[in-house]
Length: 211
Image 1 (cartoon, rainbow, N blue to C red):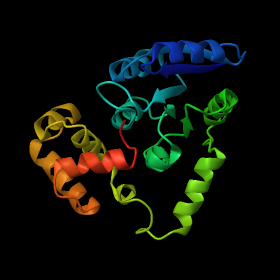
Image 2: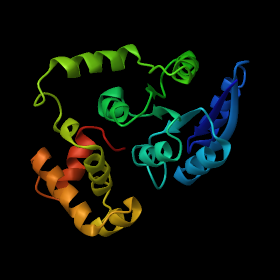
Image 3: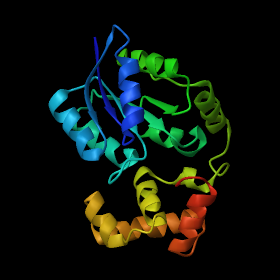
């Protein structure tokens, strides 16, 4: 029996997913939640083998949560569910430790296949993500979108800045110093060749990194 946690802030979608998963004889949903605090509590107290994690959560995003979740349970297998296309975040999240990245528009059977695969210790890669990995392997580091060059922490800071959050607030949320956040901001600006926070927001919207 594979123990599963489901974290998604859309209650109807979450309920439908849980009902679908529990139709499978080898799957058991042990916990559900709608935000980052719920995710941390599920991992801490219920010890799922696999966590289905929405990337776009209130408070802390899935991108920000992953290091904390894996620190609490290094054996945890995280499957990212996202309303964003694979091109935007899949490679960054796989590099950060996710075992699979699935679009919410995927065939439901892909979710079942992904759970069984990651539970057995294997990454689950859709054909679309596989194509992206192949392209990444074959191209030069300077090819592709500029945001692909951002580190995990730079990406976190970039997304929050693009939503209008202040350096001080970001520092508090990410448990960083204001100086560190400012440094990440400066590096991000340089890598993206941007000059202001409004430029960051425009870039994020243009590349469909935020809704």
